[in-house]
Length: 378
Image (cartoon, rainbow, N blue to C red; front, side, top):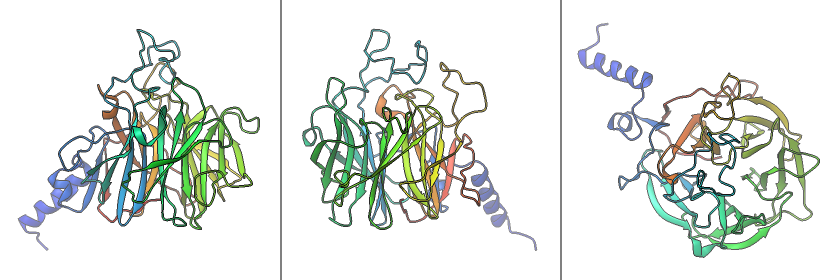
């Protein structure tokens, strides 16, 4: 059968779109039933402004995805790669003339929220957690979940007094996914000193908190998972936790469930660093384990150089994994890629699973293409 010229052109266009996806939000992408995410440009909201970027949590609710973003501000990020400690060091602690800290360990972070149904059209809903709604100090890594038991939306965040010290986590709640969130608990003590973390709500409504662990002899340089209380604002009583090791000192855990298995993905320590981190894969049959280290799927195959930003595939540190249609999407932050910290690039990657549940090696992609479908979050 001979195809019409119109059909030929349509087929050619479809093939070109598949092989060389358009940038996020272009007419070609929006009009042909696909979602295209860029790793080389920041998405823009419905007002035409670039998204505020930073550590991000994703909540699915009512057919939409809500992205909660830690807003570091418009300060200039610091590139630690030339320092004696290399890219992943905290070269700005203490601040110096060569490596000043105007962004990381400061007390002006707020949390903004965006709503999207297709990862193409982003509505800025404003500030979800304001400075006045939380304790004075350094706020990191907001994570928001919905508590069906109470009807509340619960935001955990790392809370450190200013100047720098470790105290615990804080918890804020809201009646709506857009907030405003108001802090209801401070200095919440978990199984270790506060650090990077994530929160998972299981199918039965039980919530679990995973965090880095640095001073526990059972899991030095690893992670600890703790069951949360009925209202998700504290550890359960009695406290129930499990610990497991990582190959190297690790942080940035993301926690999700797929096909009856539980996954935590973390990576080597990366202090808001240029070059990002790797992706360590841990898997377990239940949230409390036993946890097994499976693989490192995020390192480039080259000798490690602490002063190089090219050690890891994504150049990013993990923020979250969320589900869009039948795809599990890994989202990370490409630190030190902009003149303003809250404009740093993101990195989106679809996780590819083998039949046995293993996660395939990450490969750098300028863009990621997904079918446009209703959003579902893990």
